[in-house]
Image: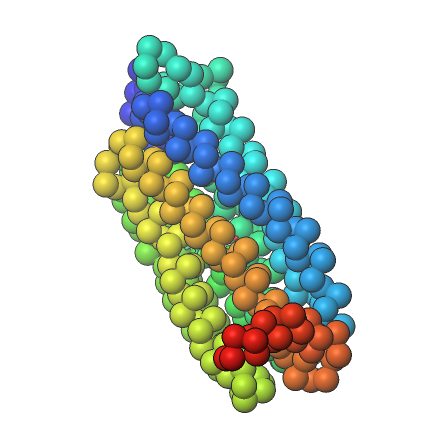
Length: 288
Ligand code: RET
C-alpha cells in the first residue's frame, strides 16, 4: 500500500495505479513503437544527407542525433515500464522489483533534443551566421527554462496540484516567450525562402504549435484522476508528440531543404526531386 507521503516521493502516477493486462500491453506497445521508430529513422536521416547542398546537410544529421538521443531515452522508459509492474492475479501492480516508473527522464532528454530542434529551424531558413547564433540562443534560453520549471513541477502530479499548476503556469510563460521567438524565426524563413517555398515556413509554424502544444496537455492530464486509462493515454500523447515533433518534423525540414538545394542550383537535389522517367511514361500512356 502506497502512503500519500511515499506517493509524493515517487512523483509519478504510474506508481500509484494497477493496470489491466490490456492497459499494460498498450503501454509497452506505445513505448516500443516510439523507440523503434526513432532508431530506424537514424538510418533514413543519415542516408538522405548527401542529396542536399553541403550547407543544409547538417539538418538531417542533427535529426539523426535527436533520433539516437530520444530513442535511447524511450528505450529506457520502456524497460522501466517492464521492470516496474508485476502481474498479481489478473492485474499489473506497480513497484515490482523495487523499481519505480518516472517520466522525469523525458524532461532531461528534452534538454538535449529541444535546443537541437530549434537550431535546425534557423539553419534550414538559411539565416546568415551572426543572426543564426543570436536567434538560436534567444530560442534556447526560454526553451530550457520551460523544460526545467516543468521538470520541477511534474513531481507534483501525484496529488500536489499547487506544485503542478504553479510551475506549469511558470513553464507556460516561458513557452509563450519561446513561441514569440519561433514566430520571429518563421517570419525570417518566409523572407529568405524562394517564392515557390514560401508556404513551407507558414505550415511549419502551425505544425510546431499543434505538436509542441501536446506536451502541456500530457503534463496536466493526471488531474483527471489516477486511473489506468489516464496513465496509458498520457504515454500515447507523449508518443504522438515525440514522433511528430522530432521525426515527422525532421522529414519536413529535410524535404524543405531538398527543394531549396535544388532551387539554389545543387544538381543532386534536383535529380532527387525529378519524377522518374518510368512514372512519366506511364502517365503519358494513360493520357494524363
Ligand atoms: C511542460 C510543462 C507544462 C507547461 C509546458 C510544458 C511544455 C513542454 C514542451 C515540450 C516540448 C518537447 C519537445 C521534445 C522533443 O524532443 C514542460 C510540459 C508549456 C513544449 C519538442
